[in-house]
Each structure stands twice: as C-alpha cells, then as structure tokens.
Image (cartoon, rainbow, N blue to C red; front, side, top):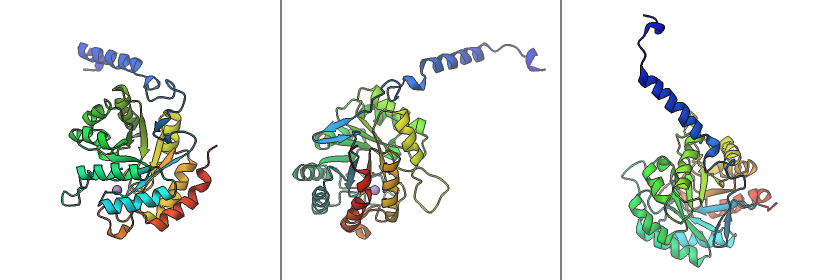
Length: 294
Ligand code: PEP
Ligand code: MN
C-alpha cells in the first residue's frame, strides 16, 4: 500500500497544526532574553558594583571556602587590587561523593562577613532549593552551576527571589538551551540574570572543557544580559588563565571569573586550575588594556 492509500490519521494533522501554532506563538525574538524585545544592555547594579556596563568586572576567589583565614587572605589581596566581587563555594558539586563537599552554612557567614569587611560583594553557588532562602540572606549574587543549568525547578525557585543570579552554561548544553534556561528565570519575574560561559565538553583532551569563545560573541548579539567568561573551570589549567582571559575580554565578555587561592597545590578542590597571588598580579597586568572604560 503506498502512502496515498493509507487511511487518514487525524491525530497527525492535529499534531502538525499544534507545531505550527507553537512556532508562531513562541518565536525566539519574542523571548524576554532577546535583544529584539530589549535592545539596550541590561546593567546590574549591586551596591557600588556595576555588571554589564562599560567596565568589565573581575569575579575572583577560591574554588571552595576552606576556612575563614584562607578566605580572608584571598579577599584582602583581591580588594587591594580593586577587585569588587568575591567568589567561594559553600556547597560544592563534586564528581565523587568522597571529595570535599564544602563547609556548608558556615561558609555563607564567612563570605558575608569578609566581603563586607573588604568592601566587596559576594557570590556563591546554590544547588538545593532548600538553601536558597538562607543563601540569599547572606550572599549578594546566587550562582546556578553548570550541572544545574537545566534543573528547571531550581530555576523557577530563583526566579522568585530579588537577588541577581549568575547562570552558568551546562557543560553539554547548546547556546539555545542556555538562553531558554535564562528565560525561565526572567519569565518568573527576576530580570537580573548574568550569563556565564564556562566551557563545554568536546573530544579535546588537553583541556578539561573547551571555552566556547564564539558563544560569548553570539550571546552578546542574541541577548541583552551581561556575559562573563569563567577562565578557570573552562580549561582546568592555570597556565591558560591569562590567554583565555585576554581572549574572552577581546571577544566582548563583560568580565571574567577566576579562581584564586593562597596555595593552589594544597587546595581542597580544583588545585590544577587555581592561581596564586603572584599569578593573579600577572593576570591583572596582562588584562589591563581590556579593562579601560570606553
Ligand atoms: C564553580 O564555579 O564553583 C563551579 C563548580 O563551576 P561549574 O558549575 O562551572 O563547574
Ligand atoms: Mn572550582
């Protein structure tokens, strides 16, 4: 029997018409994240810090908050050099359940007290919806990590709070999936979203992930949201932090995120990629030409 002789299946037609209506209703340019609906750059102001303006920002600090002393020494060093955003993980998404999992709630207190003391603002990843309320009492920017970019219930939860969200790209997610994840947050009422390109899984084995620089350039065109490049997790190699920072800023990133630790070889997490204070000074000297306000 050729297809012209087949009995008509009404459900298929219904399906087709649903698909075309769906496409008509939800054109990408109609999304809240789109530059078409919102041509001007979104600029996020937190205390005296501006993200997405003309001046690129540096988000820096240890991978994990390991102790109060360790965090304080990093924060003092960073603030001496004008860095305004202090990062540090309290709840760590580790591949092995036997690896250091972070200090938990007490790390939020350290981040809060030390960032205030050093006149910085703080950012910390939240993985569990039950930690959102406490984290937002202590922390200025909540981070959704790569492993949770497509955790839609978590995205909905952070869409209802009044704190900026830094959303990292899933390591196996397309740019479109990344933008739809951001749309979840905007559509729930939180318009303060910062995107972060943090590298994707490819066949390359010299680096932990592949920093997708084209994604930074594409995102600048497609969306009005600020975009940060994570120059530590993207390659997993401290020797690439400087060239990847320069490249990210050259391609239009609104800032970089970099892991800094007083003694990287003895760090409790990501010891291969964290840079020490001397290397951080070298980084600053090397990105200076990209940091000027235009
Ligand atoms: C982090 O920034 O601490 C982190 C775990 O990053 P990612 O989610 O990109 O792996
Ligand atoms: Mn890390």
